[in-house]
Image (cartoon, rainbow, N blue to C red; front, side, top):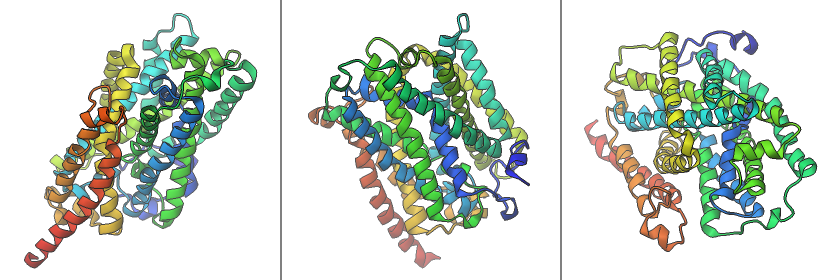
Length: 462
């Protein structure tokens, strides 16, 4: 069946392994799903933090954005090969590292992440559409974009791939048009390049935020590669995901830095973007709002798969189908809408805190997952064991993974610098946040050593 026809059919295998005869697509599809889904207002706002929150000059902001994305995308893209090899969603595969019940800790956290990003996107889409039409409130915008998002999430994998493929061309073209329009038609202030200045705290904050943007996609990746043919290959899957997500993030983030520097402190980033693109403002805001719907659909889809995985762990005899995925998608959407209404008045402050907290809890997970997959098991897993309540050969709780995960979070605390918590070490370093680097550097070798030692002790009893 052709991909175009598949996009109009309701997906029937939410978390079950995808049979080889149902595999389809190419690595090129991985480029467009990540490129198209990143060109949206939330990415622009994230890049704008470099100017508005971290007070960097344009040159420093661009360098920090590029470095952070290039580094963070390595960890994101390394997960891409897991989907074609194992044919299951990312959170199902996490049972292979943490055990059947141990994985619930991580699954619960990523469900919160999906709802949080969905709420953030809804706030921006509501603000964007409300600025275009008098009398059209943010509430209407949130609901309108949300309905489009739910529809795409309900149909599932193939429709989301088709949606992001179109957004790669449409939103990508409008993005380049907006940058060109601001720089050469509207113009920027004469002191644009000298506004703000380099500072280490702001620079490393920008690098960390950009890296987190990429690392936050790690729990998504296998969900959008599990239908790929098993022979897709590690390198094609890695590079297509890597460059799709990197280029799709860097360009809108740079646009955000331009808007933040040109308009701050007199305007929100969405209002600033509208002011700087006068003449094409409706086109820019409508396309970026429609593009938000594709990212929202991805969050809803992954959130539903993770929620079903959580439930199936507790009730292993249950095999969730399309109806369960639809119901859960709608429930998560309603939860995200409530979050959007509660956070819209102080969005930027909440958003910055949210993504920095995510950084601290996702870094240990991605380190453990990648070490286990590439260094310890070399991609060889017992897939039927993923669906057993006792975890099969992986057990209910994998001690080394849970211990190292909690350790990976704890070792970051002395180095955190965020609106919610700034440690003494971070104060001494001038507000520089090194927590995620410490978490990666310590968690990966700690898990490799402890997991190897643990297996060595178990072997005599086997």
